[in-house]
Length: 389
Ligand SMILES: Cc1ncc(COP(=O)(O)O)c(C=O)c1O
Image 1 (cartoon, rainbow, N blue to C red):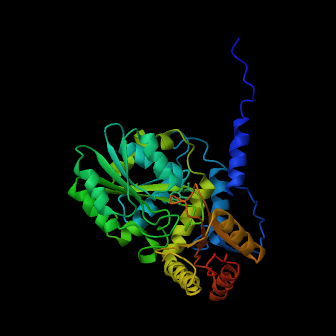
Image 2 (cartoon, rainbow, N blue to C red):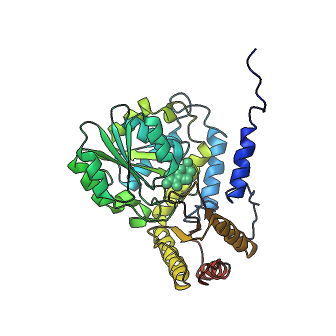
Image 3 (cartoon, helix red, strand yellow):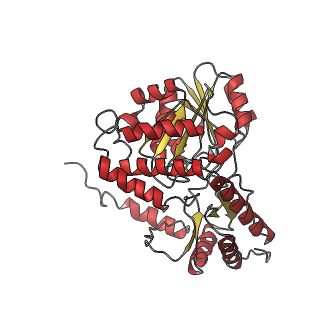
């Protein structure tokens, strides 16, 4: 007889739950009604395309034509002509030789990092990278060196001592503070050492570069033989899914080796149809990207003018610091009660332990809505001990 345990197998969860509660770090689901009256500055729908009639109609048409699901892995029955069309147009728009779509940005990142590294390789990862890149590093079985945030010199230093396969990985725009990576200098450091550069452009696609072609395009790195980019279809494109963009041989390699491509059901046809329609809209209406950046700038100026500690945004993410996790939660709740929805970032989602509110600069917000959101965020700001917000 194995020894009896005094507790049930999941009772350890109670202690963790109590600890979370004491630290003000409990997370709760709050279902969003379809017709919410709140002014939404929390979502990632940067260009306001998720509800665009052309995008939702394309999703419905794709579901009617190709089915509610893609029916299998891309290598079995899950590859449709719609997927091929989306991949060709994404590659063309972003300036890369080839593209491969995935069921999410998360799985695209896992695929890119694992398939391009492996045992014996070195991955150099920015300390501010998104969880999906971090998990890619963990799954890769490569040697992983985490380097100081946005410091190409630190990347070069780690690469200096390494012989063999190496890959530097970075977000183009960091999720927490909305600051941009120094892509051109990173590419230089990688090239000097024969390393590849993987750029996660989740927050850049649709917002940065001419007409929103993305951060790699803006940095002159799109289509380079030593650069691979990933992106999500769930932010600026208002849909769902992910993509890896790069040289054709990289895409062919992913088709043959990336576990999150091979063992995952293909991207949902409705999501593929919606992303394709959004991409075509973006080509037709290129000013959307510039408008998103202008809204971000207006939010930043309005926050800093009020003495709040905001970070200058490089794309659509505007981050403002809160004195504590509890204060951030209360601030976000007060904004919500006043009709404005904002994001709330607390540990463990922030690498430096500093809690923040995160505001999304959507291209479809009017100047009046921006002013209203600013008035609410400023009015509800916590007051620190020095009496300043
Ligand atoms: C920087 C970054 N990379 C990857 C992802 C994952 O994308 P997805 O939500 O499509 O899985 C996200 C977002 O959620 C992100 O912010």
